[in-house]
Amino acid sequence: MKKTVFLVLAMAMVFTACEDDDIRNADIPSVVLNGFTEQFSNATGVEWEKKADLYEAEFEIEKVDYEAILSSDGTILKYKYDISYEALPEAVQASITADYDKTNIDEIELIQISETSYYQVEFDAEPNDNKIIFEESGQVTTEITTW
Image (cartoon, rainbow, N blue to C red):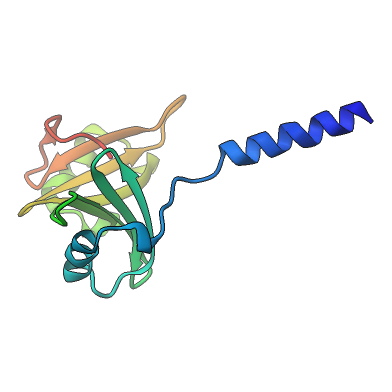
């Protein structure tokens, strides 16, 4: 009986600790919501998190996964979304062909920061996956943090 009680309490603690950090739309400042909907008016399934003074939104547009980071004044700092290998610029594809194993690609995302596009490619590797960010020219950049 004691083992059962202990097990139930342990499971309750695990589930409490695993609660996500999502916050409700009602708790998002209107200036942030306005900035978001101005750019992504057709977003569905929006989930919000707050990290320090930034807001992160995860959502879908036409069945494509997106994420966006907004400042507390509603400015979109950056966003990313899933793309296919074929949607990569030819220079990025050439760089991957020359320097990486294309068959190990796990995920590809386009990251938009201001007017500049970057391409985050996640390669399946042991023991950890490896994310590389490419510029449109095909050059690898370390100036942009993987996300």
